[in-house]
Image 1 (spheres, helix red, strand yellow):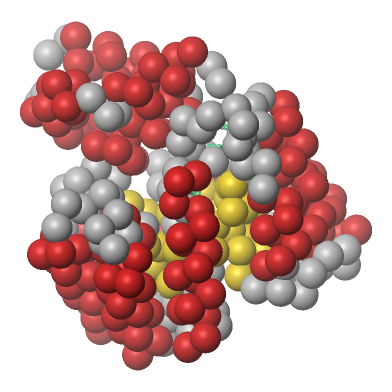
Image 2: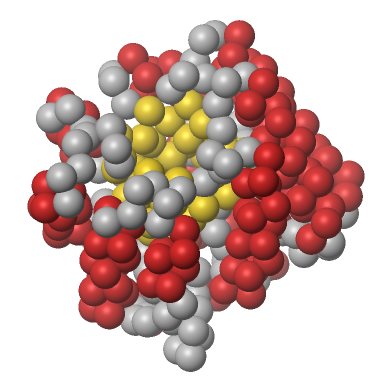
Length: 304
Ligand code: FAD
């Protein structure tokens, strides 16, 4: 892993740095580039705009690693409030939600996370949409896949996320190829025994693309990497997949022109839209991905 990336991901776990960044006035401007806003109304407004441009949305209420049951409950309520608001505006045909299990209690108790995620899935179903479980660091993978299996007994459309940097992921893709799976490279600092590095991550992404496209599920290819986007398009043709039987996903604020280009070509493009006040961990992972963003952020911090 690039040393700068390792450094930023390490800083993400440091309390002093967290306080400095979270209270710096400039942070708000930087955050606005990657986060829709703090309130449910912001999330709904951005969803409306994206839907009007012919793209789809998945919404993430920011807040991971909760410390107690009350916080986990608050996060569930944030999702149900959001789903009701989207439904009231007729937006649930275009929008689903992404949930991090650590935001609903996974680190406290897996059973609690399952119960809480079930509440979100039930609310999503009532509003005519569905849920994708985000994937976090490798210490949570087994537990997340266990919870996913339980949720799918009642809500079979619940989506999984698999990360091509993990050595285990090709086997997971093969096991889950009949269902909704979002394929990403992976955003956490992982140790060498469990994760590939550099070019190997991309090669494994392509292996997983093949595994998912050859299955009869609904793959969701989440990447901004132009080379991988080209390979997905070529592989989709090879497997005789029509647009709409798979989709592309990109993050809010990243490569918007490319999102629009793919949508114009008739592809399904879904934008991952984070919102809420707990943006710190999310922002640090975005900065770690791209040195250009880090420079922009550091310059803005210094100039204030
Ligand atoms: P990178 O290797 O970061 O970049 C490759 C190339 O893409 C760059 O060289 C550049 O050409 C282009 N590029 C990248 N960023 C930009 C930019 N800002 N502007 C212009 N060009 C750019 N990770 C998880 O671990 N768990 C999750 O649940 C998860 N969910 C995600 C959901 C979505 C919809 C997306 C898009 C990502 C998600 N991620 C998740 C993050 C993912 O794992 C990667 O960290 C992130 O997408 C960066 O990898 P990349 O594939 O875009 O390519």
